[in-house]
Amino acid sequence: MDLSTGINPHSYPLFELPATALTRLPEAGQLRELAEIAAAAYGAPSVAHVAAAPGTQILLPRVASLLRPGKALVLGPTYAEHARAAAIAGHAVAEVSDFDALADADLAVLVNPNNPDGRVIEKPRLLELAALLRAKGGLLVVDEAFMDVGPVEQSLAGDVEEGGIVVLRSFGKFFGLAGVRLGFALADPLTAERLDAQLGPWAVAGPALEYGIRALSDAGWQADMRQRLAQDAGRLDVLLGRFDVPVAGGTSLFRYLSFPEAQSLFSALGSSGVLVRHFAERPGVLRVGLPGSEAEWLRLEGALAAWAQNQRERA
Image (cartoon, rainbow, N blue to C red):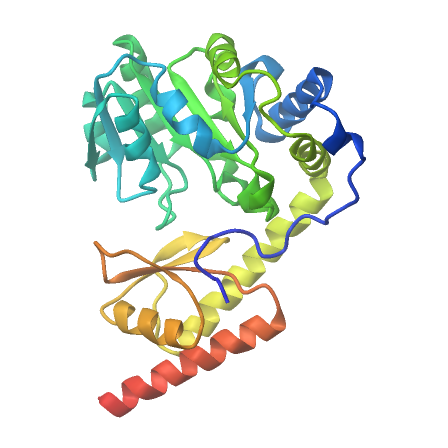
C-alpha cells in the first residue's frame, strides 16, 4: 500500500479515448484549447501566458535556463529536483531556510504550498520578492504543484504579466493521473513563448490533451474532490492522533509528521507493507498520503495499532 506519493487516490474518472488520440499527431488547435482551459482554471491572465508540457518535471531545467548561469537559491527543505534542475542549467545552487535570503538570488525557487511540510508563503511577500528580483534581471519560480488543494488566494498565477515570475502547475497530483504526464508553466507571454519553442511541436501527447481538457473543465468534480480530500485529511489526522502520532502540517493530499519516533513508525509501517515517505537527512519527519479505500484505511489502522502496541511493550 503506497502512501508515499501525495497523489490523489481518487482519480478523475477514466473514459474511453477517441482513436485519434493515439493514431494522429496532437493538433495545435487542441493544444490551444487546453491552454485556454488551463488559463481559466488556474487564473492566468490569458492563454498567451500558458505553456503546456508533458509534466512539470521536464519544465524545471528549461525554466532555470531562462537566466544566464548565476546564483540560484531554493527555499528548503523541499522537493530536491529544483536544486538539481538549476544545477543542470549551470547555476551555483544553495538551499536556504530563510525566505528573506532569496532576495540575494538571481534565480529564486520555492514551493507553495511546500512539499513536504505544507508551509505557505503569503502572496504580498512573494510579490515583493518578485519585484526585487525583476529589478536586477532575476527570476522567481513558484512551484504550485499542490495549490489545487491550497489557499488559492495566495497563488501568483494571476500576477505573471509583468515578468520575472514563472508559476508551475501540476496536473497529475490533484487529478490522480500522474501517468498522464501533464503540467504547465504560467509566465509573461514572451517567456511562455520561449518555453513553448524549447518544447517544440507535439510535446503534449494526445491522451494528455484529452484528459487535460476534460478534467480542467470539470469545475463540479474539482469542488467535490476538494471537499472529499479535506474530509479524508481530517480523518487521517484523527486516526494518527488515536495512536499519539502528531500531525505537524501538510495539505489535504498529504500529512506531515515530525516527532522523535518517526523512524520507528516508518520501519513498522514498512514491515506491514505500508509505504510512507521518509527523508534520510531528516529522520524525525515523515510524509503520509491518503488511503484510497476502506480496506486501505483498515490496513493502515491495523499497522498503526501494532506499532503503538510495540511501543507500549518496549516502554
